[in-house]
Image (cartoon, rainbow, N blue to C red; front, side, top):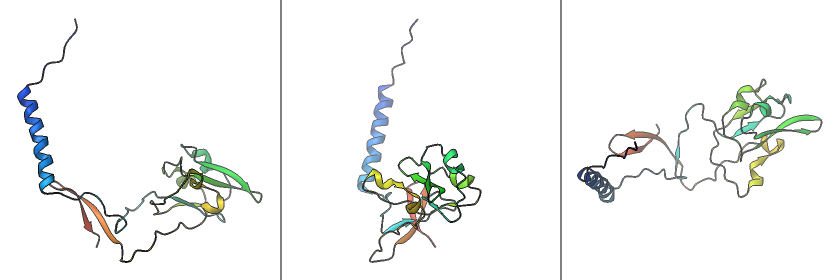
Length: 164
């Protein structure tokens, strides 16, 4: 025997719609800002943040463990001047940090860079030379960048407080 879903109480549905409209009107009259005003404001990144990865070529021993452990197949090994070195495709990288964790000589390090921009997919592939360079810093602003920390407020939602 086929069971049909129970019909909702139309007064309950009307009450839920009116509640949603009331919430929308509240934010229309008293708007709250939940957007970070980037680049004038910048979030303080937590300890252990997994940003873009940097290779230290002189430390790397070419063991290929990083390429073997990569779940996204973003890490590949290339031979450069008779030595195997990793290259990375940031279009595939999921920033899991497995490559950094497994490296026996700490030749891979996570950086705090998270806001790099690229114009095409070829720029996402870092060969060993590009992979071992320091990442470009964001352009300097006319006024200093304000560091903020996100906090959850029960009534307002996300609130950004200055970092002391």
